[in-house]
Length: 222
Ligand code: ADP
View (cartoon, rainbow, N blue to C red):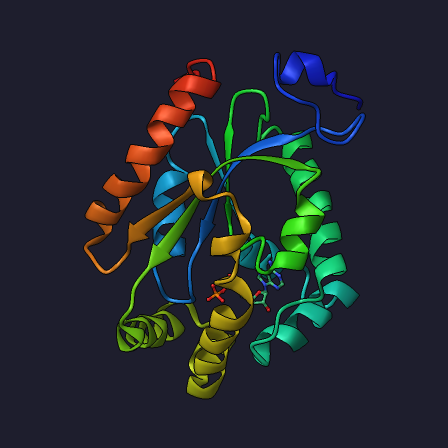
């Protein structure tokens, strides 16, 4: 189905010709910072579609080629290669539109876990209209490792269960993901203090998202 861009985003610049351009807020943060918790909370709000790339990969059929590839990278704490990640993301988002779970014309897309590095940010650029980038910050590494240990037990995540892998993922975040903070125009970037109770973190995130929803989208159907 071809979507008329002008109908979707009146007055907005077009992204790639004949492709929908999803209006998005990007959530960035190291493993264990609480992105998943916040994403889950946000996904209950009408007019928000939360897309976690980790969940996207975990939903793959474990027996499929792609599922096995993901499993290989995730258990070693490595990122899935960028081109595969982007293709998977595009297929996934189209399926969510087809299922009518995500309505680009009325829903703010909250991207969680993607882009993961500058190469992915470049690849995504033509497809998304970034309205804000929220950096969740928690300087105390040990707090995050504690959370990861808790998550390993609760969610049976194999990549969390191995302490060495968890620490490697944190290093990878510092090396590849954190530089995104300087990649995006500074007026798009907001720092969220994640070393706090979930309700307080949510409060900070909503103080950014609510004005965007009001400004850019018509009222969601409740
Ligand atoms: P965490 O935030 O704890 O690292 P995620 O659930 O976001 O966990 O991701 C789990 C795994 O999924 C990652 O270790 C990686 O292998 C893969 N993954 C998720 N998002 C991406 C991405 N944008 N690019 C490449 N790999 C990804």
